[in-house]
Length: 113
Image 1 (cartoon, rainbow, N blue to C red):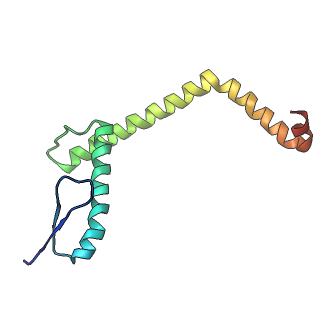
Image 2 (image 1 turned 45 degrees about the horizontal axis):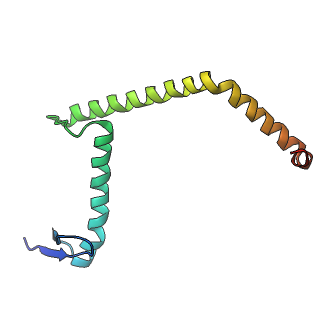
Image 3 (image 1 turned 135 degrees about the horizontal axis):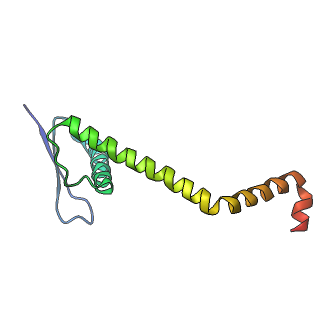
């Protein structure tokens, strides 16, 4: 199968970037940085979720672990929201009420402040 081998030297880089593809060189150089951004995003997400050392034998196990981690994240998010409401809820409600009253009075409130 014929392929194109592309070497690109960008300013500030110590080494060439080598890309091997069956696409046209111009098209490959447009697509490759986007692909690298997606790969780096997945790498960062795996590090954030603590999956960088995780080697599952099958897709089914990986899906279960990711679902479990996302479930734990959502539960943590809801618990955090409830704690925030419990600790700061009354202060937040009173400030929201003051803002609503100010909106009703319009210019008169602005003059008083």
